[in-house]
Image (cartoon, rainbow, N blue to C red; front, side):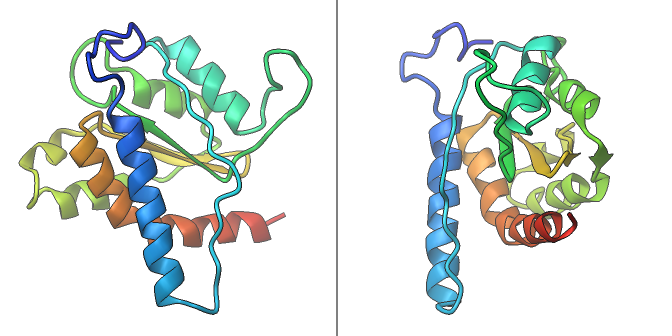
Length: 171
């Protein structure tokens, strides 16, 4: 809510932290496995208020279930990260919105991430983040804290890339 209302003097910090973490991980993976070249062809960003219908609309659009606002095209991204809204405040509804659009949930992914990251940040245990597949798009909820969001990305991205490969070959 605060980011969508432009209440942060510094602007949104978690989105840029996720983008930087993804780019750094891709660079590391490309250097480690020179025979593979992981490329990012498109990055889309948005800030949405903590309202289930608004979050669902963006997730459905980015997963290709609905067309753009002007109905010109459907785009399905391989991977969508959300940041924030995974805590216990009444306005924290990102997991509920995510679960409403998922075709298949992946409970183990976020449970594992929470368990692994708890040693770095005990508050990770309190995350209600959801993850799963909508169409052929993998959706992952991340914490709103920029450091925490980047840590989850660094930890999970290699595994998520494997899941994306599986999704692409399942057609």
